[in-house]
Structure formats: C-alpha cells, structure tokens
Length: 327
Image (cartoon, rainbow, N blue to C red; front, side, top):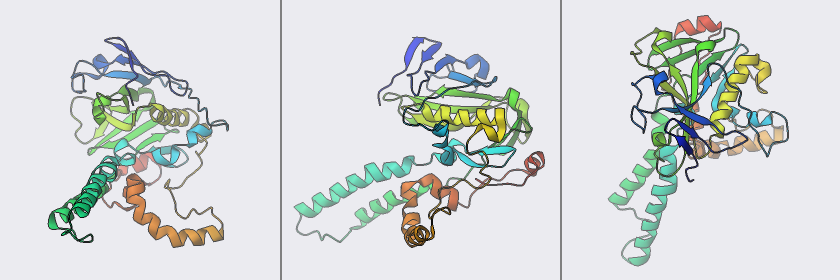
C-alpha cells in the first residue's frame, strides 16, 4: 500500500483518516530521551500520545451495525482473557508472529514449485516424484521457516488492573508496576520497524517502560518501548487495541462487551457452543485443522503448543489476588 502520511512540518505529521480518525504524530524525542533509535535516528520519534491522560479515540466501522460490536472484532487476537478486576493483553511478539511463515508460504514455496515443474517438464531424465538432495534440502528449509516462529518464547501479557488502577509488565526479566495515571502509551509512526519504509505506512502501539516504575530486575537508565501491536497500511488495529485498554481501565468490565469472559481466549475447534452434530464433525476434522494451524495462524499454534513461556513473578499474583498465567 502507498504511503499516505502528510508531513506538515518536521515535528508534525498527519496520518490518513481511517475509520473516522486521523492521527496527529508529533516529535516526542524530548519526552523519550536519546536512548531509543528509529528510522529517523535519535532526532525524531513521531507519536500520537494516547496516555497520560487517557485519550478517547472514537472509531467508526462502516460495516458494523451493532453498537460497539466493532470492538469485538479483534478481541480474540489481542486478549489472553479477562479476570474480573483485570484484563491481560498480549504483546506484539505473541499475537503477531507470522512473517517468516507467510514468506515461506507465499514467496519461497511458489518459487520452489515453479522451478520444480520447469525442471520436470524440460528434462526427460528427471523423475516427477524424485527430489535430489538440493531440492529436498530447500523444501526442508522452507518448512522449517514456517515453524521458527513457534520456538520463540511466549512473553507474558500486559496486565491492566481496573480495580487497582495499575499496569503490570514483566519484560526481559524486569518487573514494572505502573500507576494508570502515569502509564505512557502512544501510537508511533514506524514504517522502518517492519521493513516497509519506502512502500507503506506502519504503526506501533508502544507502552513506554520507565526505570522509575521498575520494582524488580535490571531495567537500565533509559525508557524502553514495549510494542503491543503493529499495523501496516492502516492504523485501525492500533487504535482498536488502545480503546480496549482505555474502556476497561475507565469503566471496568462494563467498558468492553466481552469483559465478563473469564476464560482463556483462544480459537477453539470444535467450539464448545456448537450443537452435538457440529461437535462430532468438528472432532473428526480437528486433526486436519490442528495440522494446518501453523500455516493458518502461527500465533494461535504457538500460544497453544509452545512450551517456552515466561511466567509472572509471585509479586504480581499477590497484587492481583489471583494466580493466573494464561498467555
């Protein structure tokens, strides 16, 4: 998709209006310090600051008629579950791990298949069902790339606690306890972070981790940007994610339509709510579904089956009053 950012000045860029909202990105380098480098070097960090104070972003979904239903759309992707007083929201590295899989599926494998067919059609001495060592090695490499994302550790979600009005983060062995009134969250214009710098717009929703909020572990002297979600081309997902957070921290369970779902949030096949006949068919097809899941949704596959998971320190369970390590 083409870049649609409008550069008003060096310190003000206006994004394209999408779903009724056009973000204004301002240079926040003075607010963040010199320790964070972007594609602009250390001179610019272009952000739409959302908190503090918490900024309401009214989004319009032209295809949704049920009031508030738009915010249901991405809930299963972003959230690890709600637990009454708090909600766990997955970070970008957990719910957005598909780059290598898609590269293998839609780039490397078609090239391999095209080459395979050309060789077989042009050479009579090459059997159709035979793979020479080089071809077999390439095919194994392609399939291996699809599963690389699976072996990356599953990080703990960010815990937004409405009752305590605090945010808990466990990032790189450092534990942060952040008052909601001091929680720094911003949408950053960052096409360089996803390799689309010359072709398309891209946005990160960052939760800034400041050393003053670190209560355990080593966190350094500079703030760290924890990426909650990345969106390429359109910024809708960034602001949908933000609105989940803001609504929950403002109104609690009543603020989000799925706030009373105190269970793990994963795509389920078969679905427990299906009728008996549908469940029987689902169980019969489930081996195929789970066999294809790494290619359909690498993130869902990794969340379910990757055994390498970070876990909350005991202090967080004491603060929240519940021992929950869902991812």
